[in-house]
Image 1 (cartoon, rainbow, N blue to C red):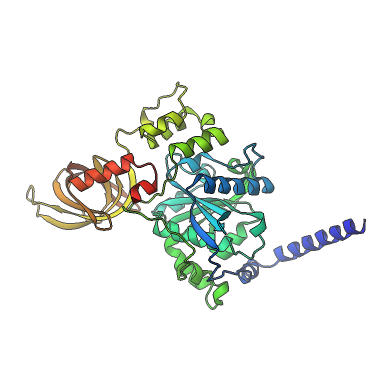
Image 2: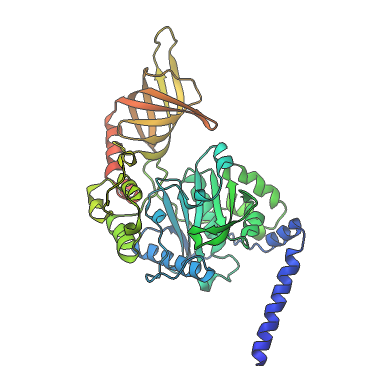
Length: 433
């Protein structure tokens, strides 16, 4: 009986402390949060951070995530013991893992906008984020194994540093967006300088089992300066600006890429079948529209036996493109001849953001004439350049910049080989070979 009484006293004591803390002015609360930071600039070499790519790594990530979500009331227990969503099936989603002594102890996923969008956009207004330009990625599926949750951020901070570095250097992402429980939003505001998308709380967020959620965003182009101001004068172990933007962690194993692609797909036919058909019935529950979109993503014959069959009844023609498109970030330039009294245009810089067998899309700050063939050179990867004849067929002006769609008239062997590898490759490892 005395033990129960002591437990009740401790509970009331902690509730009183939380109530007292919540009554403090917000700047004071945020200052307290920042004093709690403990980011080790030299973590143990027993810690490894990498893209989750094997069946064992993904299984462990989905298991840790399941238990964390069930424990928080964000999902009902699944017989598989895994939390697997349709977004995990897409090449535009990357799951990172933290491994300690070879065992997965933490995970986080980045869902860049793909054929299904991302979960948060169904309930939060992203108009202001999109108006600033750049690609958006939702940060979700963050979980740390129970045994490592009270280690002062020894797993959490390295994992979040890896996420930040991956998004800025490998994922072609400018804006991070999150949907978190109202009880946790101040941590993201205080430590990571996320800004709320809107003040009101979504009372019933379907992606988290109907739990309330607050949306927030971080502009990575502005983050360096914002973090520098927020952590100015802090000692090294409490300075997340130095940690995220200046510190190098040898524990982070960055992906190897042969080309300037912006995704690191890991799903083979076996992995798709294992996680989305066998372990959890994700594919079977999709409507026909989303099934067709999956088919538009995984076109290789090897995937056909594991993709969900359509039941019919919908117009699915728009879901499929004749030529698949691939996300890139490649520098290039175009030289155009004199035509119709206009002078020749030489060496105009292009920023290629999407490619297909028949064309590419690029941002260009120079005014280009349409339907005029020019010589194009594109850096597809380190020491890999393609030389083509191409002409702009359409122009699209946005708040983010001016984009041109190009049709290729005469690709060289390098371009043909490059596109063939994109079409035939199943995972990022296939392209790195």
